[in-house]
Length: 539
Figure 1: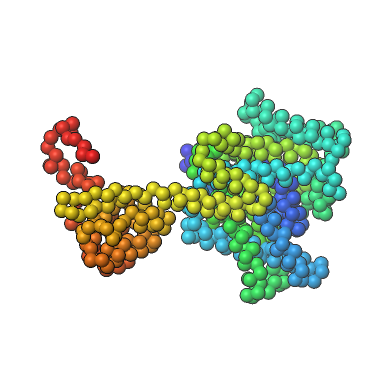
Figure 2: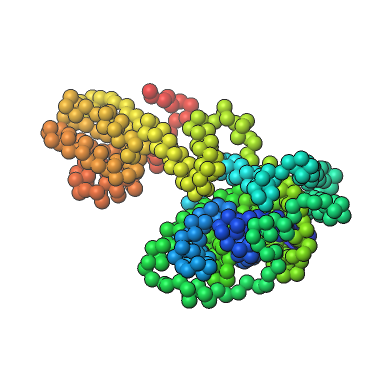
């Protein structure tokens, strides 16, 4: 028991300090995404607290931070607007439709975990992963540029712009230089504290967290504990019409949330050289969204920016996420006045360093070293992530990669032809036989001019799908239609099962009692009595 506690307490200091840093970075992000979705800032903050706490305790990736995200907020805009239009003016019915959608989204995500669909994230190719992080880094960078505008939307200029740039640069400089002096201090937290002290004691007129909230229409950061939303059940009719309205949004939000969470999980796995549990993360994300929907949160998923801040700050365990969530709640309940005085410039500087750490700069170095198709996928995913959303980008990248893979494998089908002394023509097939290679496979055979006896040897080929089954069946039919004998040899056991299941005819043409040359040496060692050097390889 002592050893168990000691191992988990070894990184406690780093987890706690990193958790506080993440909590500070969560505040403007959660508020900003709430404004994007068209809801009150507290709805975003409550989501960041509840989702962050639940996933930190029950999630499949210790050290990963979850909360309200922009990828989900942009989808929620239309949902909230349409929901408001369905009710009376000032009723804010869209907010309650949002809560109901988030609850349904959570159930969908939990089903993904129950059916162990999280494992399919391993099908995402590396170029898609690189495109994802590059696109997300660009999105984070662009989102921070909005902080260089005033309440009326005008860009900063003159001394206001210079002060903002100076504070951002100072934050980045501290975060860059401090680790070179000592790694015992969390550079992001120290940078935020130093820049905040300069602004407060220097009485500088700059944008702060408090002014940011008020400029967006909020009343401040102060709030109470999340409350159960009984109004969801009173204001929204639970019927088929409601399900048809919120269902598509719930599916899209669930897909985006899971894709972003699982890809962030993979990224953190690479950074920490450990492995998370994707199915457990699906369950935790789903459960967290159900709870946050019931208690007035806007829903969310893993946050790559805050997760990297946590990892870079030394946060590795569940404690870091728990501290971040509880600290965020503490800010809302007790320290709203202090947090509202933190300059936006300090948080922008932290996020800019996250952008630098997130972007896969190696993608420039390998551009001329990887296949053009992989480069195309990388750029495609990055572009779609910026202009559309993560789900569209990743799905498009996976589809393009799959099509390229299928095309490349379709070109690898080969057939070597030879004649035996008894006049039998043998086709030796190499390469996978599937829907993409069927045309090339059929072109190898000359039914009209072939002799009366034909053998097809599948020793270096595999039958992969229904298209392959149909191609072989049709080929057998063609040979038999002209009165010629055809035999299939050296099929693997699983291929035989497929063929026998497809048609009884294959039992007449498949040769069962035949040695498999792949195992001939191992199965019959007594046949080889001479030293290996005395044998010659026949061409």
